[in-house]
Length: 240
Image (tube, rainbow, N blue to C red):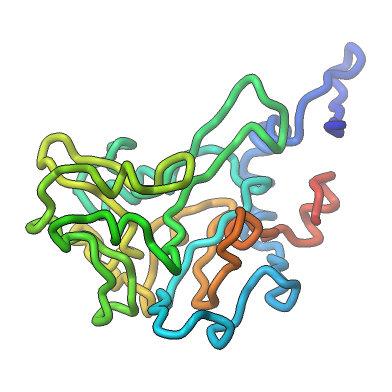
């Protein structure tokens, strides 16, 4: 059952959800989110070791992990993603998707769909032109070469996850996919597995992190992790 916070209105109490309380608290919570010490136990079984992979598997050297219980749904990550890649703030051009369901209660009200950089990428296998490829030059990131993309959208159809982790630019007629900001021409920072990622940098809640370790591929537990610290527990948020 969803636990609720209560605030004194002078005329009794009004119940609001944790996510609602977060938005009311505003800058105070953002301060806690940035200043609090995030907790992420890399020995908790949320990762697999490279030596446990099947032979000849070329794993990416970078992954994005999210904490949907910490996400406020501000879509700053989406706007920054489209801005650094396309030069415009357009949610349709974002490589990361944040979906909010007003009919659900916390924490099921928000879903974050980031590219998983899959160990066995169905999108890469489905691409008939080689536009979607594993770039050894850039840390084995699964990337799209827009100049080779035919616009067939086979990669989008092949993605087994919901929401689909690729999108499509109907103006330029080619697929869009997270490249860890390796090709982000409208950003002065260096992206990629050895650089920065716009979504990680801009998130005011610290709800997105980069890791070089390989997450568990089955299910979502490897990609949806706990980034909340003790300060969040004091606010009444779950820390497990």
